Image (cartoon, rainbow, N blue to C red; front, side, top):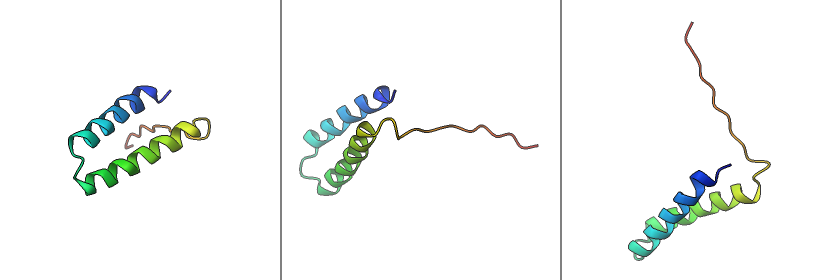
Length: 57
């Protein structure tokens, strides 16, 4: 379901970790992103989303 989103995102996270290992601010944000990905993966049945398209009348 979300693999099309998470897989490339995780690859980018790893790429940035290797490219900027001394940027503590960036690493901290990447850690937060990875935590959110891990939460979604472990609770895939619980986590869902929906989109609403609205039109002004």
